[in-house]
Image (cartoon, rainbow, N blue to C red):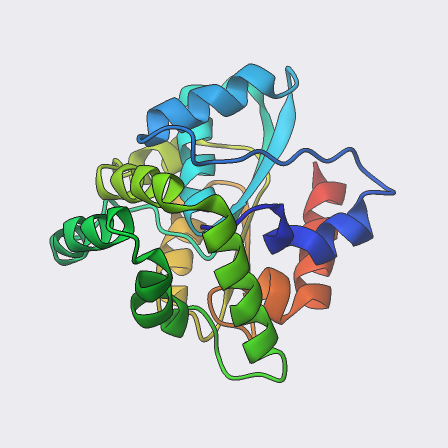
Length: 221
């Protein structure tokens, strides 16, 4: 439930150096359909970066069109299919969002898991809520279904041989470091960075360190 504001510090820092594109990811209810929509508007060759659900979607883009990818940055994400206990929570959340309680779902069930303690925590949480409410319940339903039904991408990662940044916050409780160590082990050409002082959203929690890591990755392509 984020838009390009999730990457606002990185866009500001990198836009003068490399061409950047962002894309909404709420107009379909499957990873396959969302990936196809991005591939339709993307250049013939490009590098893809995604965080959380965006990272999961980046992996589906790699699966569908590996020959078009120069590299990938997979941040605070998960290559596995969704666990059954997480899937079981999706339908009540979807029902609540459809009933007009999206703000409650975000406030009580999602936002508390996003961030570690830090000086900008309240400000970042307010931004997360603003993004979610701007996107609205239909996007929440679509994204929930896409996450619920996503495939395992571990075998695909073993075959992807382009430069890949694997990055996460050390305090990420949603997608903890051990999942990123797994991705690093699977990917033939990966670099692992675990950032202190960040939880699930290092692009906003530790923006300078995240931008520096992305800049080094871009230079390696």
